[in-house]
Image (cartoon, rainbow, N blue to C red; front, top):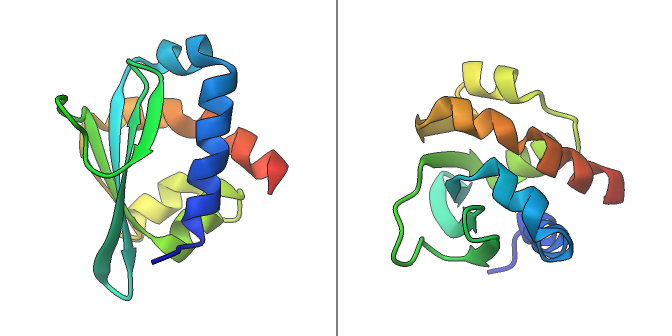
Length: 116
């Protein structure tokens, strides 16, 4: 199933490949659970310790932070139309694990916004 968020993850993959050192500076492993119509549609792993982003659950590593968000809300978040704090407060974004580490993702998503 193709989701709107796939394009954003593809862009993030290209940015990570372009500058792996910048990605590794975040030094965390994030699991994104993307939902569609209230059901889990896809998982994406951002292994920024290894400088890799790929579709699916983490392989051989444990995520520091798991973020659950709908496809539509993730696109809104990545394009700057949805504030991460308000998304969290409204229950649109669920974060488990190291919440503080999730805040380090801002600059990566902001870069995605510039290209969309």
